[in-house]
Length: 269
Image 1 (cartoon, rainbow, N blue to C red):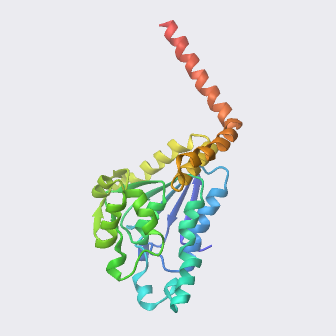
Image 2: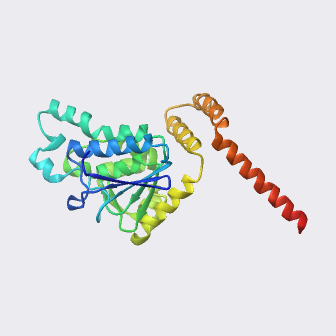
Image 3: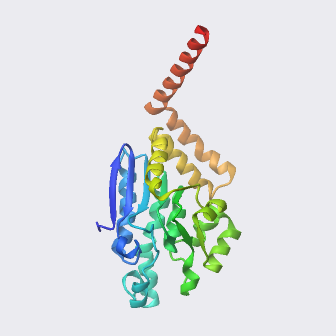
């Protein structure tokens, strides 16, 4: 696997760091796409992982496509139109498909600019926390291209069709506070607090049942494509399985014990 992704796993939390700060974690090579997709698949396959944090090394989260490689027609941006199409399908498209397949919640810790594909990758995550230094732009039309990684699908689902159209058609850059106002991110922190706050949120999630977290994420993802009846039909078998897990039994025992303690303390008072 490429060194583009550094993985650290601790306490049920897998932190994946895009590690190419010299070019602002830009994407242009198939091995980079494979590294990110493979890291997501590997984290999902590990039973101890309950949450993933995705962030970038250095001052940027991800600068999108590498402009110099666009100019030189390198990586998956090389070749004839047919070769370019095949390159996108083989390389870049692995990333959104891996995000859609992963069952554990993913938090984007947006440490700096997330431009083009970088913005689209944040939208593939379930939760987004931004440093006050973060900037966001769907920059593609400024370069005479479109999002090749699914921005037209992800953006409207996060911020609505009108906001998505505004970002897509103007290629404007918005700051962290405006992103918060638009609902693109759920929280803004000072730069030095981003890592600790993201980890705090991840640990808050990781205290819960691995099975329940995975099932709930699956249902939320399916709901995008289902009517109510379809989602209810999917819920019933997953809930039946969840009821039979040891994690459910242990959680119920903890809640009952806490209720009993509270009742006893109330009587004692």
